[in-house]
Image (tube, rainbow over all chains, first blue to last red; front, side):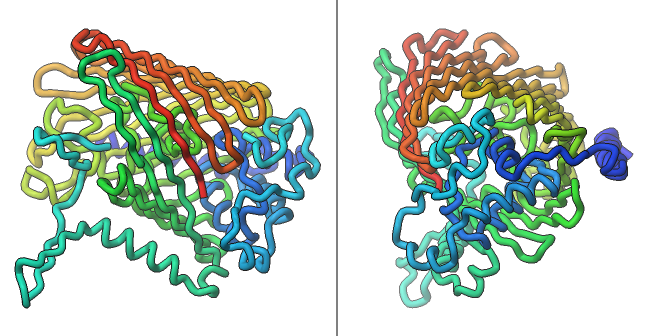
Length: 128
Length: 377
C-alpha cells in the first residue's frame, strides 16, 4: 500500500473512531435556543438571508447542503432548520410573489435573538 | 480561471474542444456547442419547466452573479480598464429523500467565455457526524477555496493574490469525500473533519500548480493512463461560542502526466478565523512541496484579512496576500484596502484598491482598482 493510501486510510479510521465515541461523552444539552444556534453558525461565513426568502421545502434542501458545508452535527442543523421554517414564507406566498423581490423584510427577524450574539444583534436583512 | 494565448483570446482552463454539429443539407452551417454549455442550458430550461410536483420535492435553483469594473496597472503605460461579468453561476440542489440530496453549480463566467460544471454531486446524510459525497466537488482544503470564494461571501472583489497560485482557486475535482462535525462539550464547540480521494492535480515536471487543475483522462499525454490519485484531509476545531476556529489541511499525490514515472506534490495548509462582535480576522497559509527530477520546489502562499462591520451597511476590509516562489523574481505581495456597502442581505457593492509589489520590478506601477456589484438569489 502506498504512503498516500495509508494516509487516507488513517484519516478515515480516525474519523470512524471519533464517530464511535458515545455522543453523551462529547455532547451535552447546552440549552441554546434555535435562534442562537442559527446566529452562531450561519453568520460565521456569510450574510444571514431573510427567512421569508424561501418556503419550508426549499429551506430543507438548502439546509442539507449547508449542513455539509458547515460540518454541523445533526442536532445543530435541525435547530437551524426549525428556526428557518418558523419564518419561512408559505407555499401560497411563494406562488403569489414569484415575480416580486425575494428580499422582503422578515417579519420574524428579531425572534428571540440575544443582542450579544454575533449577527443576531442586527436586523436580519443586514445580518452578517 | 483562464489564460490568454498569444492571440489575446481568452482560453478557459480545461475547456473541451467544441462539438461540431454538421447539418447534412448544408455543411457550411456548422453549430459549435461545448458539452458543458449544452448541459448548462439544458439545466436552465429544465428548471424553468420544472413542474410543481418536482418543486415540492425541494428541487430548486439558486445562484450568484456579479459585475465588476477594474482598472489594472494604474500609473503604467499598460493601464487597462475593463468591465467583467465575472460570474453568473447557477446552483441546482434538491432533497431526494430524507437522507440524500444532490447539488450542482454551473459556472457561467466572464460573460459566458467560460461555462462548465464547478461541481455536481450526490450526498448521503443518514449518519450523524458523517456525510458521504460522491461526484465532482470543491476540494475542501482550507476555507477560502470551498467556503469563501463566492463573490457574495468573499469580502474583496477578487481572490487573495499569490495564494491562489499555490493552492489553485477555485479547485473542484471528481472523487469521494467524507465530512462531518461532532459536538464537543457544550455551547456549540465541535470537531470537524474532511477526507477525500480525487483524481488530483496533473501536469508536467515542475509546472505551475494553478495550471494543473482539470485532470481530464481524455487529455493525458502519457497514453491515457490515469492512476495518479491524490488524497487529502482537513481536521479542525470550531470554538463557536468564542468565535474562533482553526484547522490544518493536507493533500498529496503524484502530479506527473507520465504513466511510467512519479513525482509527488504535497500541499500543507493551515487556516484560522476569529470573530469578536463586529470584527472578523481570518488567515490561511499553504505550502507546496513539488518534486522534480532534480531538486524539490517549495512554494508558499497565504493571506491575512480583517473586516469590521461598522454598521448595518458598511464594512471596511484590509487584506494582505502574498506568494513566495522558487527564485525571487516570481515573488509577489499585495495590500488591499476595501469597503463593502450592503444594499440588502442579498446584495452588496465592494470597492478595493490593491497596492501590488513584485520582486522582479518589471511593473512598478501596477496598482489596481476594482468595484463590484454582487447578488445572491
